[in-house]
Image (cartoon, rainbow, N blue to C red; front, top):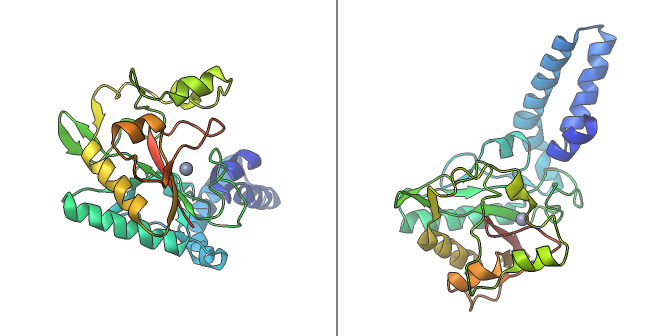
Length: 255
Ligand SMILES: [Zn+2]
């Protein structure tokens, strides 16, 4: 349990131990233990961690405004911490996007944990230094722009390659990288046909990111780079088979 909580939330395991020993010392029941754990966890997540994170060069992304989490659980799990530079960059980009497409919210997915460089945010092994962030695509439903996504976590509902396009998911599968597309087996696909990617807004977001001096790399699948006519942007690259599919979200990172 301690291990699972640490992998999911970084601080959860430690708080679990604290609550466990406290409940045992006071000879309390498991109901009291659960209440103490939840209370400590929420106080730590919303009051203590945001205060301590700046000492580790991290700051929390906003919960409301033009830049928001697609799913609030991301913040509840302390997975929304970045460097101040990255925060400033994405907020400014989300403001530019809202100016062009009024009412549009840019949704973020997993970022980084609040403490220590080198502590990876599972399963994204590179999200360990505050400089990496995943963003959701924009979508349309019934032809109208919406602010949510077909996958409630933002990952796992793929924009598959079509005939004639580069097909790295099939390539990686053939080469034995079975983890590459595994996520779609766990994420419900029932919304897939109701949503379509809003290419115009997603492409605009990608162009804003790729034109920003601070950005070092952006990952999307090669077939989407081709389909969305983004060839001239060198910062938009392919990540290789050892990662996971990037035709369900955007990965961006700064220098
Ligand atoms: Zn990523």
